[in-house]
Image (cartoon, rainbow, N blue to C red):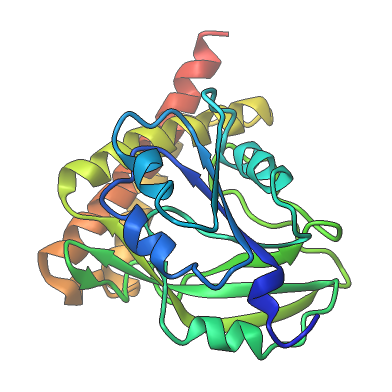
Length: 256
């Protein structure tokens, strides 16, 4: 690809009710050839705001099929084979566009971007939230998203050429405990459904011990203890998410 890589990359966003962050997100994507925004039933001003950006194309998909499948649908609307996948609550850091443009992107290159995850105004380099590399730039003729309901990712193949960019994305993970709890409820349900469909089984005892392990790992070994109340909240929510995921799976099994 030529040096001006971003002109040949379609930025792809799956979005729902993101009016608080979408302006800043799209503002960092102006140099990309196009931005494909797949709206999943927003009821706020997200679509209206997106319409004010010249390189944005808005598509609609009212049904939700899981994050992996939804992102593949979004990618299918792109006109470029090279894709940058970014979430509506994420913002590219100022120097990232230059780094992307200076790369030699081969067809089998897949680029991981490191996220700076923020909770209530503070960058949280703890609890497994840092450096948080996520595969985000790829050629859709070479690979695609897996179809996981949650925790989806790009399929990495044996001959993949891996490239890493550190501190590339500012991620507004959550502003408060209530929004973390809302994500916990949604993600634990999707993860339980995914495990259920894969034939996984669990028990009440396993749910208890896995959640305790998650808390100890994130609060003590992943340094949440050094981040005040935020580290405690994140560790507790992570543990609760683990507990609910396995208990929801358990409940699905006993109802069979």
